[in-house]
Length: 172
Image 1 (cartoon, rainbow, N blue to C red):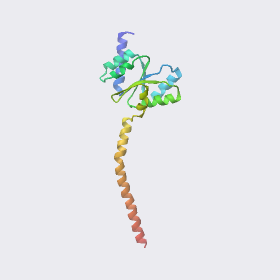
Image 2 (image 1 turned 90 degrees about the horizontal axis):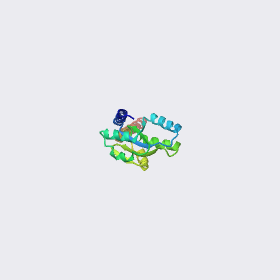
Image 3 (image 1 turned 60 degrees about the vertical axis):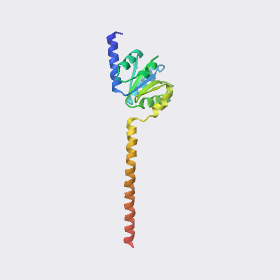
Image 4 (image 1 turned 90 degrees about the vertical axis):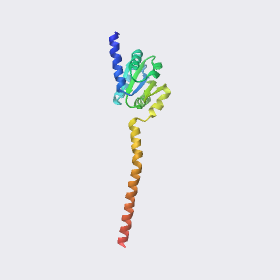
């Protein structure tokens, strides 16, 4: 491969890294064409960008990035498939769901989510249980709305009781 071609590929990977906040490194070798196609379709459906990259080119793109991906350098060996997303737990949930239907693949090598590096297969459960930004915002809004709903409910029930008392007195 020519040096100019490598530079173009590194720039393309760097652009993808800038556009996505979460990076997952997986190993998909061992999947046949049908299962790989199914994984790609599942990634597309969940807004996850899946790229098969050469480790040396990925490391060069990591080094060219403004973000410190140095914790992932040791994982760049063997076959590497890159999963990029803006939702921290989406790729982990996809991997778990895909494994339920298929074999033990893809394997999680590591991930960079919310400025934290997760290394190894044992991190998959932790990553799948991380709440996304939108889920956390929803939880906070729910907590903030709860006291207001209680006050409104109390006021409405008090009005119904008062109305019932007045109606009973007027009937007598």
